[in-house]
Length: 225
Image (cartoon, rainbow, N blue to C red; front, side, top):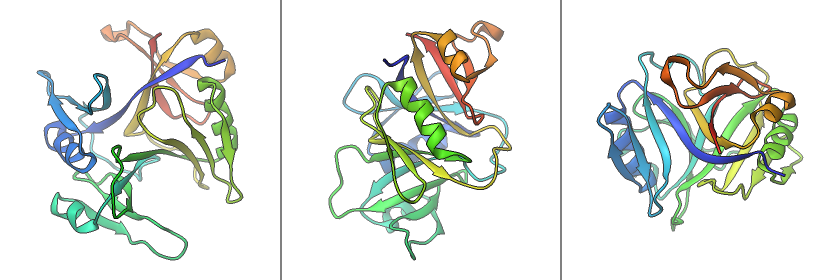
């Protein structure tokens, strides 16, 4: 039984009013700025798919959480300000790009684009299978393991992304993630008992949510369900 429901992806940005419209363009979503200098990306449904947070600190390390998306061409992404970071090749069927604040994302080229261009939420892990099992239990969703050590969760209810992917990397997490996700939690105590760590309690400095970390330290925000 699920104890949390996916709400949205959140991106940190030094300049949300620049980065937000960029992501809206490449994902074919609608950018709606807020009065306080942040904003959200919306599709045809009323709920926000991606929120862009204002932060003071610039990016300093490789994204440990990134987004996978579909595109028709790299040239179209470059025309919007993206740069190629790692070209497609070897066993990679994607190109690693960087956005306007040097944040990595992966572009998968297609002749025809699906209605939802946002394909995957990808998390680097020391132990991908353990991480996937943990989040699979949180969402009440099935986990698929492959022979390359990656694990995937598909068909998460209310998640506006096709997959949540967990990939093996040798290095541990060293800095706050600039991409996180929000969930609506029905049983916070159970989530903590499962291994989540509370970083900030709801009400601290007036926030309306809890800030937690999963077993490998990835931050996420938990709202009351």
